[in-house]
Image (cartoon, rainbow, N blue to C red; front, side, top):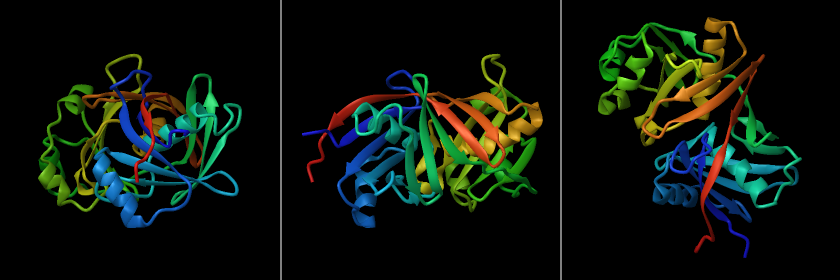
Length: 263
């Protein structure tokens, strides 16, 4: 039997780094509650459910707590599995039909490039509780349809951050992107991402957050192609290329486990 269940580390080329995702290849759609229960059992930041369509593949993503509208690392993991298993030829691009429209994955050398919508943030007045919940002074605060974006004074401030997750959970948002210019010359910026309201205190590497980070840093740095480092305990690299209303995310993936679903 061809494996239909996979545990993949995304936005890394090394095992036990990057962001882990479960990928489940299904013969047909499953009920919403079944998918949510499966994702809760996986207890990873995202589980991806992939179903072949007449053209391309249907793709949905669930955290242990909720279904989400956009996820980068589990999309990268799904494309990696489809190519690795020979379901799609490496020369072919993959169309995923999602709650955020059609997302395309293409091979770029030994990596994968994802074509995602840009999600720029607009500057806003920070909620009174935000700086206290993050435990840091904010240099800039913006918001897009999903998340708050906060710029801190330094790379070190981002890395040293110890937020109060219970306080963050009370602020109405999917998550909180925290960023600063990188001190490491290999990278243009660093970031971290916190989403306790959807069951993920800290996400290791967040592709969808880079749909917001790319336009933000492109405007500040005057460049459209950049490399970001998400400074979680696991850590991971995300290449970004801004092209109008689209952000192209470049990353690698490693399969840790392949097997068959027992139910």
